[in-house]
Length: 281
Length: 286
Image 1: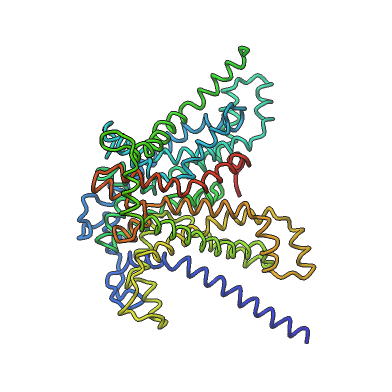
Image 2 (image 1 turned 180 degrees about the horizontal axis):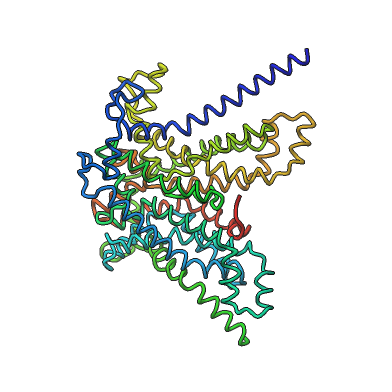
């Protein structure tokens, strides 16, 4: 009798587990399946659950292999992709260069007024950024940076800098001071020590923060919307404008936007912490 | 001050100057400008007229924003606590692994793509309604239009739950197995362990998860802009954008901006104080 009771309980537990997984999986994947279906649907009349006719037409258009009626927008997807990549690369390089000294100082030295600094460097995470972008637009109008790539780069650097400083500071902090001290004892200068000891040891963390910054800039919407439009059309801007008139094309753009995240996830999975990724976009 | 400490101060200053220059000039200055612009009238005198305008014309939208964002954060919190509890307490490693893998998926999807997903998913004849119609849950002829608070709620919850679950999981991970095992041996059920051990011991993480999610929802522009747009009621972020792009009106936009600072203010300051105190910025989080 005991055996049978145990078996029933076991079956109930297994059924419960499978239900939990199924419910969670449908909740998580259904919207994704929906956008993938839209990107390959040629004919899809309701009330059918699935498209009647599939085709890659919108993908050919999205990838610039074929000119189509979807491309009524002034900017094609290839141009937008180029703009996005160029901006993201510039933002990554500048952000890393600016963040490294600050991160090092925060991680390794005693700094006067440190709580105040920490507060300032966490503020962009804790308060809405949109009002800042709205007023930055006002300032940039006067400086001629509105609607220009340098303005958008600055807009992206604000949140990216904050994340890069914290990720890099945590990385520097995790390196035991013994290594640097023994290099110094053996006669290496501070710069040699930094470039020969500290920098190579922190490479994984620095790569992680660079990837994070790249993805953040690549997916950024709000800053580009206020500072960049109508001249600077990145991929998220193209997605937004296409979404109004062509659902299939917009869906293909949406999936294209995921490609860098997926590549970095697969290649650099061990460098990246999910929690950082969560804040993107 | 001796020579060494002067040299040291200069060194620190030089290391901090690039990032401080950026943050002070293009972050803190426009941040404070928002407050200044919102309390000054066209002739430069102090006034509260922009706020009274907001509270007469946009009161409904302000309340709508706060309500939807709080409700979304609350629903995310309930789901993420369930997920985190399952992962923390399940003894079945395979189940734990699959769950751990599935729930993270939305983390990797940027908000603008989430918005597009929801536009296809929640459309009147979109995937969700067709699915529900197939099961016989609704009539497709009178399919509900979900592009209002419901669409916003679904989008926020979909995107934010995994992030919350991660923070809560790291809080649960800090609860020692000793407590859980002791409760188990004494016959405590899973629900009891969650309620009486995990939740009270991880309440710091839970509070931070809620505060960050609520603040992030309030500040989100993409999702409401693409899902609700100009329809009424809409969120403060969307109205801010309309005031600036359609009317070139920075006063009302900034009054709304300052209201959004105030709404997240208590949560954010609590989070910042906790972060400064606990030194979270100095260690990598799980």
